[in-house]
Image (cartoon, rainbow, N blue to C red; front, side, top):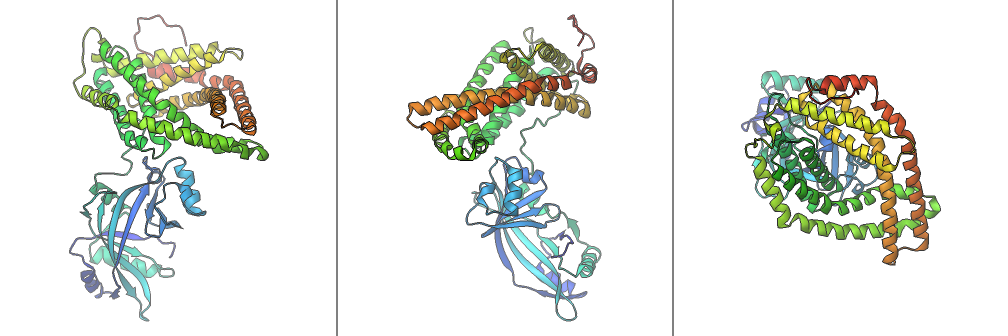
Length: 527
């Protein structure tokens, strides 16, 4: 294979291999090689990490091919004897290494399956040596585990051979000028197959991808925001139920937290009874998903926990690993039952029905009929000033609870900025969110290390009660707790510089420009 890329063309159903070979024979020496039938599936994570990285992963009978999406160039191959779920299911090598970096904790899933009958036309020189190949593909596709096929448009792909770039360019010119064929991206067959089963690349993202209009009412805007979050929850239910990978539950929980934040932070938009009802019901979703998420986090962190220990202690941690696996299994079974419960199904159905109705207005929800730009500026500005007030009051001697409260306020501020980001200049609002994330990362580390240390101690106590905590394991876990508390202390030391990076004159100026209401009856102290 040369360094030249393959070139793909669209064909009509009348452009059969026989027809093309006959026409090409007027220009070049062309013969038809035997046809080959191939079946393969495209694999990706649920959130399209390979697509976002410009890659395609094809699973064939005996191997997988990692291809560059734009050119179709095969970057790596790896032998398989079953469909890989994790990058680590592949043998050591380039494919495994590259996929591990991209996928991280996400599982591979079949996206669309294709059956292809390929016929290659060999273009030969005067000595009868093949110098270029033109492969004609007739494809049909189906969704994974679904019967029935959709017929796809045929394609022809010019396949370069090393040392014959000139001959390839000449044939490409014939196909374009004499045959009047149209070039197509190499990945167009993938996109067409996805479209045939009702999918498109990148059709799921956990990000808030909607656009609000400044003049729309806050009631309509909130229904749009909350419906988007509900759709994210719904998209992740099946993956959470079946425990495909930990990110399904993570995304479901984040969408649930955002829902609760939207309900409580954008005030006087929903009727009080509706607000109280769904605030409590979504709090229940947070409660029932928490224990499984705790076990997920332990599983994700286990390798790092083990690596942080002295080599001679690492083997002593295995009983902890076994305990986590066992309890994750039991918590997952309980979570699956709750997600299948009438209570959960009723919540999702009733909430969706409500959000698809016309927003309510009245004396109890005066903000519902106001312009969303005005309401968003008031809410973000108020929360921004609260973050400044709380952050400036924290000293090194402040209790941990003060930093926890500041983190809650920062998360509320971040959610508000993200909910309404489409109302503001993209570069400016994104810069504000980015600055806020730096502070949130520090506060998150401070709290997460504390929480992890407490949970490890709790797990240790539970293991002792169940007779599953050898002395050496308890000692190893003690070292882990000490490491976590040491990292928390470092995060505590780093807080002042992180907050100083947020509390700057430039940041104040931009926040005032973006969010400070033009008129506000409340007396405000200068930020």
